[in-house]
Image (cartoon, rainbow, N blue to C red; front, side, top):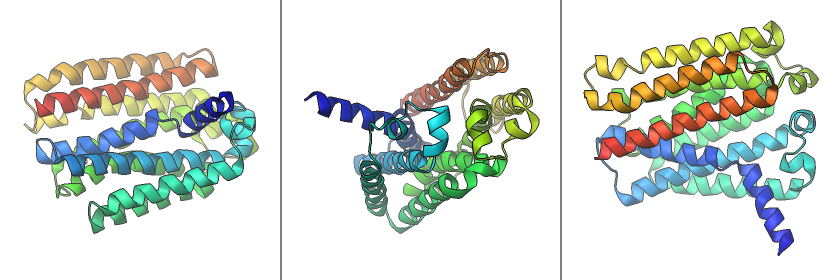
Length: 285
């Protein structure tokens, strides 16, 4: 029983479920934005599961390709610590990938094509493009934006301007987050000679770039109001979100340790997820 508990914990740590859960929530958000209301139960569930499993597959394969770097940066991770075997990791990667493809196929041909494309982008990034620095960061940010676009596509809202606006906001936010995260992993990036902004220009410079992107995100978050897409009631969630992002971005610039910086980046991400959930609730009500 104790072994099963330890293995379950290792799988939990490998998948990092808060990220796949956020992916599923963003897909459903894209559906709600495009429809202006809740999708059918079937579309909502299949969309959520596609986001969850495709994102989960990306998380799992990331640890496979990052094994040597994680021995330095994150030796406590399931694979370098030995809590998960390589065989177990590959089985989980296959299960998550196939399940994501099946749930997307149940939504139609175009959703399946989009799911395969973004899965391929994630694998390509984990395998080859992580060391490229900014191009790799942009691939990850594109993947996050994809969740909103995919959600819109599942309900026929591919051309919906608000869906694309949310996708672009997600792209800017995640790009800032990725650049900040690179500045916390410079030791491991030295090992693989990654061309990150932090490694080339220094940690402080990278954090300034990251903060600039967060500020740009805050400025662009008012676009839906300027375009008349939202009523002023949404300011009750947008303004607190923007204040929180600016607060954490300022803290990130002065973070004294790598662990503190990683904690702040996590807080930024979770803060955005809370905002998305709050937005969905207000949108539906």
